[in-house]
Length: 366
Image (cartoon, rainbow, N blue to C red; front, side):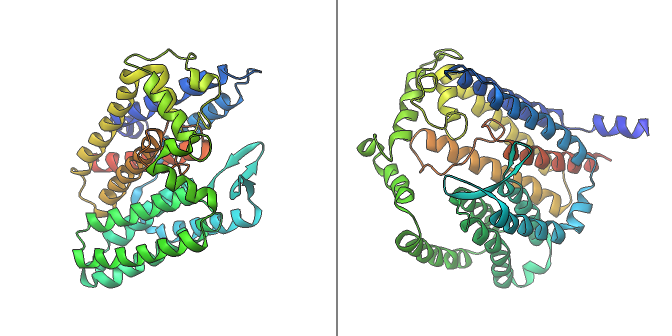
């Protein structure tokens, strides 16, 4: 037993673990800094995020012991569980700012969609690792889209469009990774344009349209829809090379920057830690991506490789969108910065995903 545990932890990829831990510590530092700007100092969010990180680390180690082939075998049940919790949250969930997407449990909010992102990776990895799809690519494309569409439909009902973009982005990237022909990819673009047209004219609310229009000219609505982006840009620009120092960011401390601990935490990092601090965060993400891609090349199991690549795609898309929101490149859509932004569900889900990858790495060395 001791020899088995010793082998397990010797085979652990400590580079990946160290990087995600450092990113999480960055988040804790900035969440603490934001708390300093409150009239009545409260460290409740810091405490909650610390608990989430501890639970996430525990989950990481637990899932590192769960054989990934077991996860593959039960992927259909895992997919069904994802559908079940999305239906359940629509019935019993808590509504926050017009979105019914949280369970309230003992004072903690649990957001099922964050775990559904991981489930979507498992579903797509299982689906595209099956050799049957190569024989009937068009049928496989439609079936995979149908499976993902169930998630998308239930998330739209909340409504929460950020995760919809993430999950659809995952699906599209999986198609590219599998080398689907261009003619099949073009068949996706046309329906996507039609659906987007329908959503814009008949489903999107005015504030959601405003967020997209603001992207074209954030300064034109700096006191309304573009306020968040304008303040984020001011925060990023005022940081300079070395930043104003932790706890001394005027935009975050004086509450000019809304959702500073969630959507716009990168702006807080840029303002308080400057260009060097923001670059260090980007460097840590680069190391994470590099390491995941390196280990994926040493894996012989298709399902395992797709899980790792799916993790790279998920974390990259979320990182790109979040940072893009902070510097005015993409519309504000409520996407957190992985491992850094405040949010227990996202933190734990991301650690679970890393735990599954650790098991893949350990099994490859055994």
